[in-house]
Image (cartoon, rainbow, N blue to C red; front, side):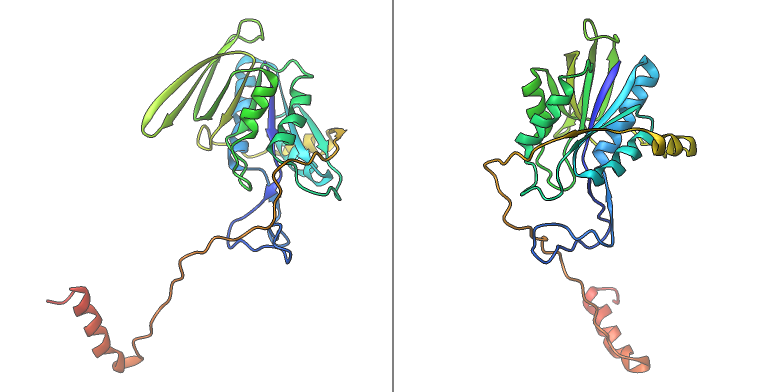
Length: 258
């Protein structure tokens, strides 16, 4: 079974989000980059399926040369091959979902992939579109938001899969023939940590590079905005003995004292 996993280089955000001066990007000078949690689970699921059924895992990403870092991280987890659809650093804009799906389709259609896995959505844009658009371009069945996956058969000619998810409290099961496209959600598995041999192998691996020209779309980003968050404050009741009467008053208001 040959599986293609599509990943994306996104900012690592573990605390407060700050924007660049022009308001058009997340300031990553103090954070760095990674791939989305959903995509980490997609890579792990692909490695598990190949371990059970045989075959190989290929990871692909669309981005600048810096995205090679994320591809090597996937190789360290067990992927056998990596493809970088390389975009020039000075491209006039970011690829939208239509152009991204088209670029990924050029890779997916060129190889005999039984299964294409994606994260349910990228953690930076959260547009949920690429997986569905990719399946449409390939003419393959698609299921999204999957939390459990099982495959029977190992070939394009006779294989099939069962994909399960929960939607509004209702369990849904989809049976799809291979080849197919699946988007998975975080929680379908627990991604492994890369081993030392895996890291060394990934460091030496050759990554295939395919130049990609920027394709503008109808949508255009104007600016980013950090959502407002609730502000918390503390009131000093006093210092030492002087705070006791105020403390008692507050406790009485809360109904703690009777």
